[in-house]
Length: 83
Image (cartoon, rainbow, N blue to C red; front, side):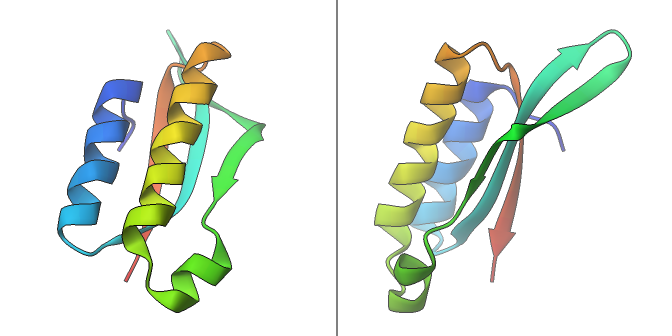
């Protein structure tokens, strides 16, 4: 599912309340032809936080990354979670 920056941040916040770890965020642009990902705008979870089970800290970093990417002009995001 492709999400706006606002929706992507909300998904990350909800994931934290459910103890779900955000594993990857891919940023891109929504154009008339659909989603165009940008390989330079991919965020991966911090493995040390994942192994320590620190969902909140990792997911806060994910939210910060989305905000940073939005400031750089990206308008669409895909989120991958880890169980």
